[in-house]
Image (tube, rainbow, N blue to C red):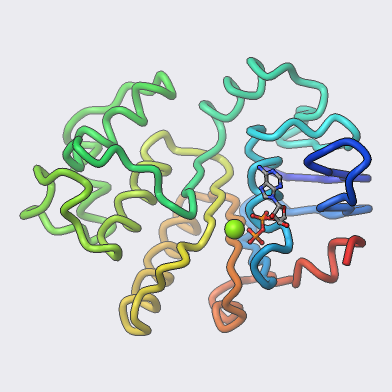
Length: 219
Ligand code: ADP
Ligand code: MG
């Protein structure tokens, strides 16, 4: 899915200093793009806008030929359910539900029919050990929760995957293995990927990388 942004302007409160001002920016279909920048500079805000969670009417945001800025809140919700996978910084897993049920719930919300086999296949592909599939999400390690959050975003086969890097970072070996797994998965399925982080070192995993500072005219 091609994503194209023109004159994106966003502020949380009227008359406040804008958080984001992006004159023009494009993500080609199937590309993997990394945006880095210090915390507080608007990375999560940008993802929330592109996910259609935060409305951004004074902009042209085109996704797969459709104008996000012209949609109502309901239309954006439907568009997100169908096309967008979002891995939140805090994961937002349902702590008391087990892993399989967390993923099943995400598929249900997106009105996507999935079998148990579809779920276990994805869990296996993301190297989430079978021994934890029945465990409540809260009992998993951070690294495992991160993989489950990715599985939950991918189960509905999104065209566009947004990943907000968790603040609680993984150790280097686990992180590298995780990044390689994620990139391979997106490549195999032609998923357009936008990944944000404060950690510039992650640049090397991506086809394109850009600092938020160079995109955003508000500094
Ligand atoms: P990052 O993800 O790069 O750390 P954020 O997008 O979370 O940055 O935040 C960008 C700026 O917007 C920060 O100054 C933050 O305090 C502010 N901000 C974030 N969320 C809200 C909100 N819901 N209401 C008002 N200001 C917010
Ligand atoms: Mg953030």
